[in-house]
Length: 434
Image 1: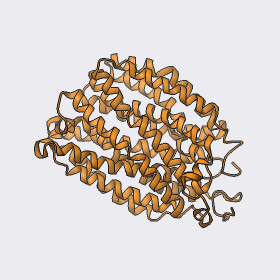
Image 2 (image 1 turned 120 degrees about the horizontal axis):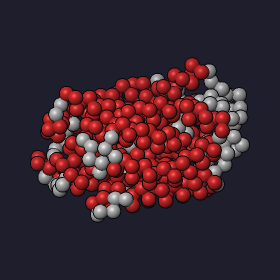
Image 3 (image 1 turned 45 degrees about the vertical axis):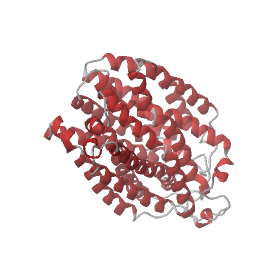
């Protein structure tokens, strides 16, 4: 298939640094808003969970986590629909549509009735809104990962593509930071009574800014790729079976451990370590800030040592630290020590998150790249990332909380096996001359 000289798969293509930075910033700014909107639920559910779900605190948290689990099942559908749009009609079209849907979902979250107002209908409405947002996020990942890897300069794709997780984590950080700021100006009772709704109004407003920015992006998908025989089809994706299995194995564990130490960790510090909601939010804010700043550094390192070496460090490192970290954090009462422990774990996690998007994009050709990256990621993410909180809280509710880190460690073995069969990007891959 012939490609234009300005397309990333062309051997002479290497954009200027200024051009690359501009496109990366615009694409990633939309990604930040998408994930900010999505993570507002995780950080503010500690305030509204008992307004929608009955029972004690753990059972209310479990109900909120159940909504996350069920909504995650929409991610593969979003990954398929938006991945197909990105491969058939362009990356820009897919990214603009996904951020629009996320903004609408945030606005709907802000006006949801509680159980006191709508009875059993309230949690159902919340589930429907979360499914809309999960559908949007499922489509966001593949299109953004593909776009950012395609506009990046040769030999620096790990560095530039790391900004997908800079903004993904940045979305978490902003959500956590917003919670921290609101806690300074509002009491816990005020936030529970309805103050949490303002956070979702802010999320909807930021979505409009993201939409405006993304409309200025240029397309990276050549016309020839859009009209290729298997463009944007599962048949085209399944022609690369080894890559499919490797990406799935890596994503299942990567998503599980990511959510285990980010969104669920806030509840673990409150519910198990006995810290206050404000203290847990402060710890997560500091850790996420350090985690975010580490992404470009570790991404640049992967450009030198290769993606496979980075993934070996990640999978083996996680196998060694998950159980000790959870045991320490569960018994620890010091916010400073909790911050230090979590930061250490997140540094190891960075060897995956910094290259998660480009790692998958490099394994597939242009005509199916967005669909393959987004759809396979969404499957692993829905099955294991989306279930992380629900599994952890279910085990705690049954008195077996200690088994959760053992389960996560077991999935690290699956990831390690996938890495063994992974090709080294420095010698194999669909991006030329890297």
